Image (cartoon, rainbow over all chains, first blue to last red; front, side, top):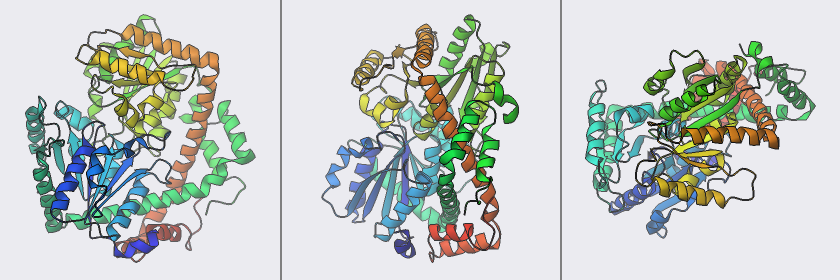
Length: 282
Length: 282
């Protein structure tokens, strides 16, 4: 599949939408899709669920708020569990994005829950990263703790009708203004996704950021970086695949027994398993 | 280092404490340390920050609430950024835990922020996993979305003096009671970490869970699983290390150029880089 779609990819703008569970990302994504469709552009939504390896990630699939768009052929919606995928999010996401891009979707929205590595991976896979927070979540220490200041191209304070929203937005704006000189200061947008309030501003910010990426050459730079990251991740995935057969059989069992009795540490056992008498992987 | 400490490890109980940013994990961990010290047991705290690859994770280091314990030799506190560590959280954490275990800490508390993969990794590395939520976070869909129901051995509803705490606790308890037959139903404990309220109950729950793990044979099973996961992760880390030299030089640059012009897909390029004319890694 990768081989077939690859040559045509590159026209879509990829928007990563991320934030804590319950921040309102799905509702916001649904409202954003509606707005994009008003401009008659085709949009694809990938809802990535890296959080539940045990259930296969079905829960993020009940996308009630997205049901407005179910019958619209200009909107593609798919949930994706990446946990079982070789290489995880960092391999699965760019591949899926490329397919949707090649299929002619002008905007690809990658929505995912999570704080930490997941966000970083999503940011690495997107042209524009939108971080959704809620009132009370905006204080600078928390945002910095979660690494959000560094990955967000656009901030959204959702449920802006709740107390503290203006404070959260102001705090975020203040912190962002302290960042070093840069030609893009992430806007902080207040939304109420359930009513659609602020969605127009979000859509405007996304188009502005795309224009900025194009004009500054940053789009090209980000895509080069992504290519490099992806190739690296795919190589690792291949190596893992090739080493699978070292993780079974009598030698593996013997190594585990030595590990259990603490007569060897994992690093020496790993080296023995990889070198040993078998041919090297590859 | 790994080699030296390995033979003596295995006596400590590892407690993973996780939850969203701002849930009050640091304060709770500080209060718990105080309680553990009252029983004259030695405790080590590893604060793991997987969220900020760019800053090196220094921010989680300002552990003001832990300052009570700074002068107590029975308490070890260390912040750890795992992003630069080969193999990340899943390799770094068990290694650090083993060192602390060997150094005679009876309890090792691994505190981390995050939702998603991070939690799963922490749960995989701990004997007992404590998930800290706040009022308003307890509803079943959110908890299930984040995969929390599946990894928590103990739930804490912190800031239980805020509105909605009793509701959150009741909802969680109701959902947990719906799980299939099991010999351990995760208790839901309401705490106010800043005042120490509920910390006694948390400490009780941790000891109960340890007794349960020992009596049921589950401790042994979890540690076997951890050994297997760790050995696998270390092998992958070694393979990645060995493939580093494939990710530079003229062949790598040529592959990136073909990827940029979309004349080849990452999977075929990875295979070429790994096979090619060079000897196989290892």
